[in-house]
Image 1 (cartoon, rainbow, N blue to C red):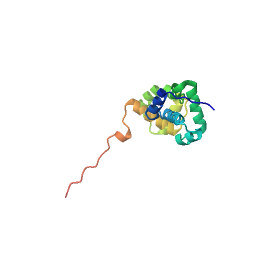
Image 2: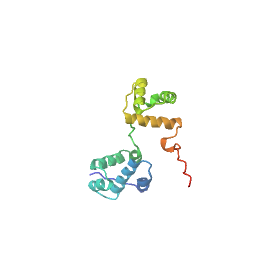
Image 3: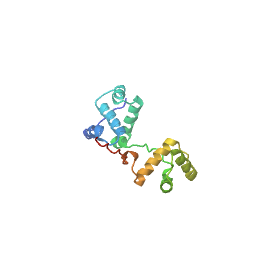
Image 4: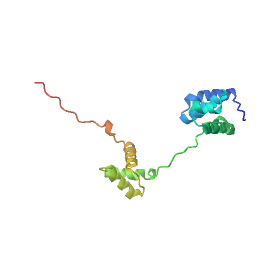
Length: 152
């Protein structure tokens, strides 16, 4: 059985990061460390922190391997967006030739870039492009109003 020794400085940092670290995954890791420092079993920690027992073991292994700095490190990078390289050229094209529908935009994107995306992804990309261009979203555009009826 492994022994975990938490210094008073570690406990202060864990106590602070449990609620104040910017990323929620690190907060969850700190919660696991905090519960371990309080003498809970791995099964109890998994239940209380809402993670699997394997995650508890993994977080504790990270702490042993590199201390709190290793626990704070997030190795998840996410996927690279294939349309990001074409964003400026597509923005120029769509400003000159606004698409009438998402399906039309989908065809233009496929023709110009060779990247095939679904309609939902195309809509999200167009929304991101309009935010880059400084356009106003549909919710913030002024709406026509009715003229009030004259009182008889």
